[in-house]
Each structure stands twice: as structure tokens, then as C-alpha cells.
Length: 246
Length: 323
Image (tube, rainbow over all chains, first blue to last red):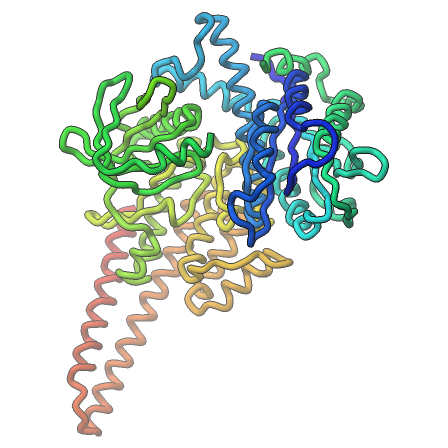
């Protein structure tokens, strides 16, 4: 099987969207374009486990074919890593299931195989998860309430870069924050192979009560489409996972 | 997805039976043993025998762990991880299916509980066992990954350290699958998260450190400095600083090298302990001649101590001579 590129948006937020279109709808659109959307809802350490407004987190990720988690700020690093890896496995399993269906018939997925035969399928998934290229656009909610969590977000992104760069596949990261000043999002970091030492670019925050998650997601999609091609990034393979994704 | 898991497989009551869809075996839940990142482990009974059963909604993750356990089974001459007994699915209702695997039940207590009840002199004996197992594992092309006290239990007969969760076990050269921050080389800024033997040796050093700092500690502004100062501040850890630093910095190319260094320190310390307690014993007898206080019981205790120390030294010779 040829190597391909997995495209993901990672949305980090602490509240409910309150302006513009429904983020779940934009997320479904992203999925159609071969980009999965993962969402992490961040809680303050004194918040109860199921605060209002964060139900949206699951809706967005489900519509976007991704993974979601609601966590306390202190466990953000491990969660960011876990969610990203899980979503990769999920996408690749989709790819592999599609191949299985072509060989074994319409309704076959890995779960329909007897346990003895799943091992080899999983080896293929794991192998792809190690070697696939990954493009991940990180979208950080920087509305006022996120202010005291941004240092943690920064650390967790550096940590994510450390985890993903231990793989043999290539990575590209970019970071956007929302709400932007005049546009829905602000570019913090253009596409780059790692996120070490991002302290200098990480924002000292805008305040304001609005959380236009939907428009921000839509704008993020646009940045996948217009990003420049990098050398060594094989354009011929790029459509593979998009094509097989769903 | 998460919510539905909470209501069903994370809380199976004792007596619930799990019917394997493919192999038709029946498992009766006895109690919950613990949970990992992907599933829950139960003590269960099947055909009169106790087994450990790990169940999850994620068939993919279960399959990955089964692959690891199967690979362990093929490693000759070593007992790596619990043996795999069965892999199957359970469909409690038409639209719900869970995957599970069944392994040998290792009866024991976790490392920290064991040390508290049996004494910290056991720590390094157990660590040396662990380094032996890791050596086999590394030579078979694997890295354990998520090495931490929660994944290590001490079995009773014989007293032996065994690992129980292979969720983090990764093929050498790949990115480590699962890890826990405190034991992770990357978190402390001592290197990458690429699976190599040194990754595990770093975690071994951290397992030793946490035994003396059970509440653990934060990494602070300068993680490497924090670690080194924590080691030098503790009077027991300080004695092993040389070896711990080397493990953390990745200076040991193999588990064997770390074991050799550690054994040397232990042996030197045993000798020292023997000499000082003999000296103390003599002083004690002299002082007893001059004073007439009744210290019968303390003297008895001291000779008991002596016997114990020599027993430990003897055990070490046995242990070392077998390699």
C-alpha cells in the first residue's frame, strides 16, 4: 500500500460557539474534503466534569470524522497526543476497511473478521500510522476565558510535535487562533515541520466574549487548500487518503 | 462513545457472564482489577480457573495488544508478560459489540505496596530482574514504552517483578505508542519519543526515583536540573546517582550495562553495611561491659540484623552467580 497524507484540524476550545454558522456543519464539510476534525474541550481545574456548552465538542468531532475529549488543563499534553494518534488510527482503519471491502465484499470491516485474522490488518494500520505524512492545523480558541490556559496549550503543542516527530512519516503543523482582529482567524505559525520553541510566536491574548467557532473552522479549511507545496512533500500521493477517507 | 462505555463495560458486576462469539468460551466476572488507556481489566473465572480479561470498545487497540502478546510468546527462553489464552468478541445486545482478550492471571501486589510492606532493600533486587527481562525484550526487537509502577506487579511465589500491561509496547525504531509523563524521556527533555532501549532505561531510573518520592514532583523550569537535585537530596538515591544519571542521559547502550553498574553499587553497599554493623556490634559489647544496663533485647535485635544482612548478601551472590 502506498503512503499517503492524513489531514487533520485540531480545535482547542473552552466554550460554546456563539457567533456565525454551526461548527458541526462546517466540520461535516471538512470531512467531505478529506480533513478530519478533532476537538479538545479544556476545563478549568475547579470546573465540574460536564459543564454546559461543551456538548458541542462531541458534535463537531463526530460530524468531522474525528475524536473528541473534554479534559482539565493539566492533562492537556497527553490528551492532545492521544486524540491525534487515535484519529490517525481511525482514518487509517477507514482506509484499510475500504480495501477489505473491495476484496471481501460490501459489508466487511475489520470487526467482521475472526480475531485471528485481525492481527495482520492491524499491523498494516500501525505501519501506516508510523509512516504516513501528517498535516495538522491547530486552531486555538483565544477568547477571554482561555487566557490562563494558553501557557498550557503552548506546552502541549510543543509536546505534540515531540511525539509526532518520533514517527518516520513527515509532519507539517500550522497554528491559527480565533477570533481574529478583522478576519475569523489569525495566523500564528505557518506550515512548519516542528513546533519546538513556539514561545516567541504564541500570542499574548486578545480578549472579548465572542467565540465564532464555525467561521473559524471554515477559514481553517481554506488554509489547507491554499498552502504552498513544500519540497520533499510528494504531491502525487496527496489525494490518496482524501480519496479513500470516506 | 465514551459515555456508553462508562455505563457498560467499565462497570461489570461480579457474576456477569461474558460469552465469546467466536470461540464460545464463557467467562464469569469476579472483580475489576484496573483500567488502562483503552479498556478495563477484570478478574474472571473460566472452567474453574482464574484469568485476567481485558475488554474494550476499540477492537483495533485490543488487536494491537494481542499482536504484542503473541510476539512475546515466540521469544525463546524468557517469560515476557502474561501468556495469552483467548481472543474474542462479546455482543451483549444486537447493536453492541466489545472485543476482549484473556491472559494468565498474575497474582501479586503493585511494586510500591510491596516495597512498603517488605522493605526497600527489595527494590534493587526487583529492578535487576526487570533489567533482565528488558534485555530479552530489547533483543527481540521491542521496547516496553509505558514502564511505570502501576504496570509492574510483584508475584509472591516466587517473588518476582512482572509487567502486566503491554499497551505501550512498540517495535524498536517507531514512535512510542503509550507513555506516562513522569516516566517519559521526552517530558523531562532527555531525548525523543522514538522507541529505543534507552527509552526504557530512562523509565527504569524514574521508577527507582519515584519509589523514594511516592508523591512525585513537577518538572519545574529546568527539568533536568530538577531531577538531578531530587536525586542528590535523597540520602538513599544519592548512593545510586552515578547509575541513575547515566540511565537518564542515555549513556547505557543496553539493559545489561545498567544492570552491571547497579550490581556493583549494590554489592559495594552490602559489604559496607556488613562492616559497619560488625563494628557497631563490637562497640556495643564493650559498652555493655562497662555499664550494667540491661540491653539484652537490643543486642538480640542487632544479631538478628546481622543475620539478615548476611542473608541478603548471600542472596545477591546467588543471584549474580546465576548470570
